[in-house]
Image (cartoon, rainbow, N blue to C red; front, side, top):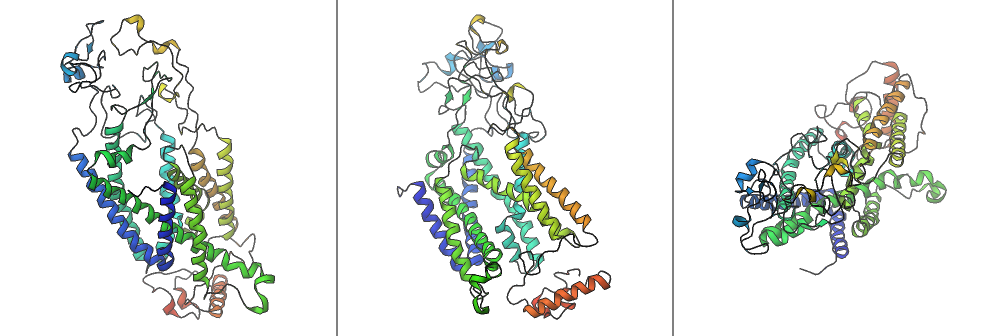
Length: 532
């Protein structure tokens, strides 16, 4: 509509997101996200419902085929009133007199590409349990399982998710919010899944729009040539702009843009805030010679908010640059691949320390640090040492786990009605295929396991005392936010806790009862009881 390039559209969107994120912080992000999510979900749900109601089939039926096409079974033959084949009367072939009486290309000719010999299925229920579930196509079962763990557990350490939890009024509200969001995820994801299936109905391998690489063969498919289907990377956009009603297609496009903006604003806010609090806040401590002249601090609680806003500007610029100019051939797309990589990094590094912080009575900072480093080291080593060919398919047995080879010969597929001497025999070895060998996913699963082992070992070794003591004023020491007590209160609280650990049994009294900190600055006992 506006004749904008992708890069210019991304920069304009990034500027809009930056403005309202800086202006209102988490409040503006939360409220705009709710509005954007509602618009996007309603648009996708409405379009999916409309397309399903107006679709002829719930899933593609067996292919009707084309002249000289041999049906795979009697049921399919009866479905399309097949006729005996010319070269072998015991076989059933495409009925050209009924389905294409005036020749290919005429308005009354009904044909397809024969891509679904036995039809498609609404659901493959054993796809995560059986590597051969999608035969004659390969099943990326290892990658699928690793992605489940990456997105499920890696997302727990996502900064935007953590920011919303920490900003909740009470822990109970945070828990309820997480449970509700998990349920709503199904309502958001299901319409997109339906739209993906609908896109394949209009632009899949059995449609007139399908394209195939001529110089390819496949034993599993029985094709000496033209075996590799070339999906249209713009198929979904074409579905919205060419097949769907204009209003619904536009509504869904707006929903996709809204979903992208609601993701980016939370990420920008979280990265700017965390970088400011964890890095810039410590500038005075590490560069006291330059920034702490005369006892006056450069970074204070009074200017920390404005610094966080300034930091959000380069964060936004970096994110927009990557989105506008980074390209990838990954099946999930450039940004989709980077999203998985981001959660993969989280899973390998900080998920185990995060769980250890919450589920051990006295978590060890050293155990957390070493487990983080171990997870990252294993992930990096395996990234470059495991065999990876870029197809995300582990080398399972079976013909479907062979990559497409160059065209075998000029013979015809065995399911064409041609003389036997002209038919290709897939067992003749003419199709030179190489087995897939990509262990992507194994590294993602191994890294957190090693991280967990390291954390448990160090935690056990430090059960009677720390093996290494961190600096009392370093970045490993926690801090109280403004309004939670002054420095003297924090020191009293720290000393009181240390004395109680050495001289008394474990207590479950709230922190506010153990020191001089004003109890109004901490959650009520019913909301959060922290063991001393």
